[in-house]
Image (cartoon, rainbow, N blue to C red; front, side):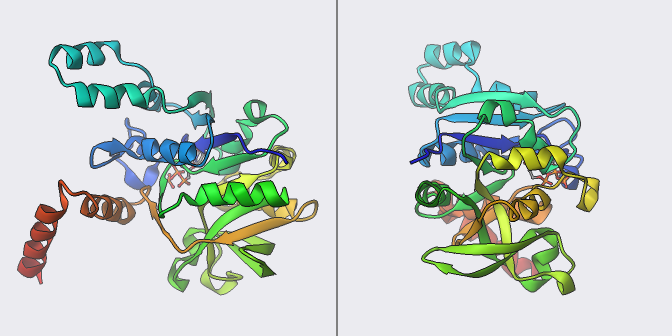
Length: 291
Ligand code: UTP
């Protein structure tokens, strides 16, 4: 059985939908209350059994490396002040996983970002977790995808059903009825127009892929948005290997767009015992005043 041991987190995009906040601050570092987005994603990878992670970064993304590094000054100060709980929390961040970095000189698209990680991954399967997408499920969905990959040894893409009006925001897959939880993909389209969408099954940002994808990305031409698209390379992959979809019922949150970011913060805050009660009261008051 081939084990999935490594993951790529692409985080080199420009985050133009959230400008100006992302001009000097990586969108992957935007806080969901008191924890940056990318830390949730690293934690999800670790809970799914991954120990070696490569983050694809670029210009202006240094804060990501600093966040997962040891901070002697901060740790010394917290120790001297007796703030031991938060000190332990800070120390745990730098020990979460073996984190490596590679730069994508020019953000040419998600497909190109993944291709930048090819030497680190080598000839083995790997997971991809988009750096701006959070998932909320009881059991990490990536863990289940890895388990299934290790059974079938074929690439698996996480998908979920979306409203018809949203299909043009995502990569969309068309599937044949499958066996058990996996569906055989026979078509993928990046950000189709509503009338061209082959289904309502959207790729939300979690993949387990075979290394064959690197050969295809090396030759992949630019697609939608003049970017090298992972979805296009996966469409080509269908000529050589089976690719499966796993449909998830849980919530995914795209923090890379304004409303998505707001919804994420509210949902995550409402689940926290220290914030829930006051936040719900505050929201009730606002709603009654504004409607
Ligand atoms: P997005 O397409 O959502 O990110 O990519 P973006 O390009 O930064 O967003 P906008 O459209 O300008 O607002 C999904 C993930 O892939 C990474 C992003 O950092 C994000 O985490 N990405 C995207 C790269 O690493 N490199 C790229 O060239 C593009």
